[in-house]
Length: 372
Image (cartoon, rainbow, N blue to C red):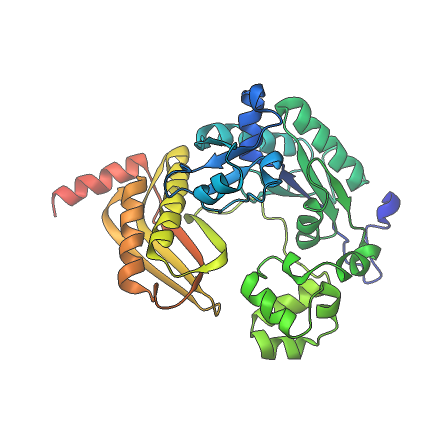
């Protein structure tokens, strides 16, 4: 019934899902190259000023050959590739391209979960075209995206979101990697543990020191042992090592907050670097607020230290806002006054806003403040 995928139900009568993860290739850079063909074949870097404190948002594959990657300081990228062409991000243009791509997904399935401007999960277990082979659907989607947008996408096809996400990154650009249900253990066993989302440099090093370098070696550990070593995170590690991920593709949810976060290759101790990162994150959050025509009342700073402990601190303002500088000023104040930044290494920073209101509601709130 499902071609190579097998029967849609396993021996326990549980539905075997067919999940596609679509990940656009070097999205921001690809959009810039599409709109300016003279950039084709050149090392293009989208991000901050290479002579200032900016960071890399995206890099073309030609730029990546020099070791340039996202979140890298732009000045370092310039050092690695002096001839690189640096472009300031145009989030409006990327958002417009993203909307077109996401509209394409809706022609194939109603179960689409956006994971950002450049990626999404699609549950095609039951789909609009009534095609049973998810691999064929993935190829059709890739071709459709390229025909309409002149951009390429890589795809991963698997029984769950975790596996599909890893698969989509295996053969970039424009690749397609398939993990059938019977192939899960074989697919995972030789992959480095860093391939598991959430396993960063610090936890990866800890696992390596325990003699665990591959996902296959991690799968040999008992759940109890991993919980003892990593607490609740040990449960997730155990499940991922065995290819288990029961999270559904979530299509609709009430938007309660907007945020962005960044995990760093190297832990941060420098306030200058932290503030640089926070400004980038604040600018991204501001963009989403403006794009959706909403304002926020509360700013939240998230700090994850090198030992994985998390600190979140918030501040609610009297008047709704959407400006980058207001968000940035608030999170920097929280960073200095409410965290141990500078004393403890930081592996992740996040900025989010909540208390979301529309323009009309915001006007009413501002009017009410005048009479307090």
